[in-house]
Image 1 (tube, rainbow, N blue to C red):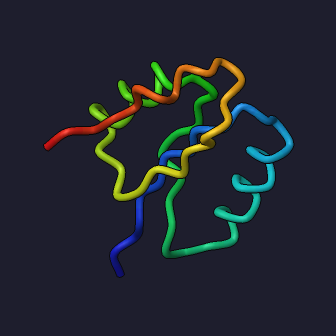
Image 2 (tube, helix red, strand yellow):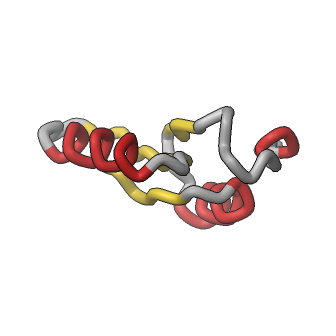
Length: 71
């Protein structure tokens, strides 16, 4: 069975823990990375090539506006 690879971009530790715990219960989803930085998220996306990115649009660093992945 194919699994969905997911990168989590979230700055709230409790929310990260909830996502991490939930994804551990899934056999069809793999959490490939967690970061609280939009800068790191862009690098992780390029390096890890996740199928999906769960992105907190209200990061405390307020630099998420430029987060864009081009083809």
